[in-house]
Length: 106
Image (cartoon, rainbow, N blue to C red; front, side, top):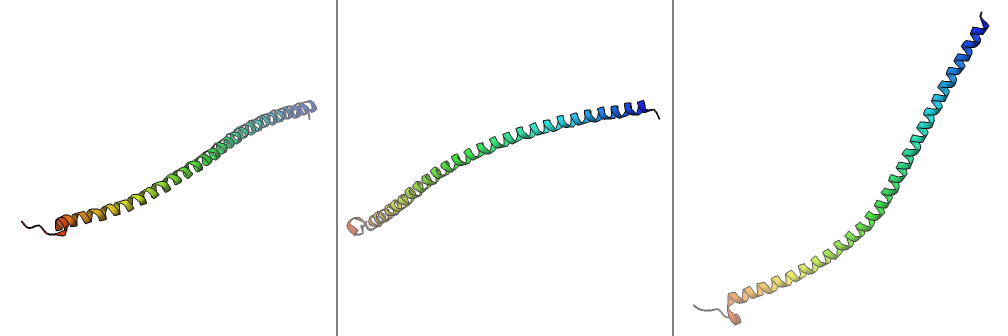
């Protein structure tokens, strides 16, 4: 057995192993850096989303208040319409009967 060749083989294997280890460490570092960038992007998305939710809650409250005001105005308008309808029906009945409640003769 040739001891020098065996030692040379072992040293080559060790060198290859160290190269593979260095490559694996570099890939691991790249993966960690990519994961950190992704986490930073996700944090920014969450923060932006939370701001949007808060802003939308304010807008929803404004819309709800405006809707309540509109509903109140519609109820008032409906009440006024009923009064107008009643008065109009009275006027129509009055015109059918003639002035002062008497029938006209033609």
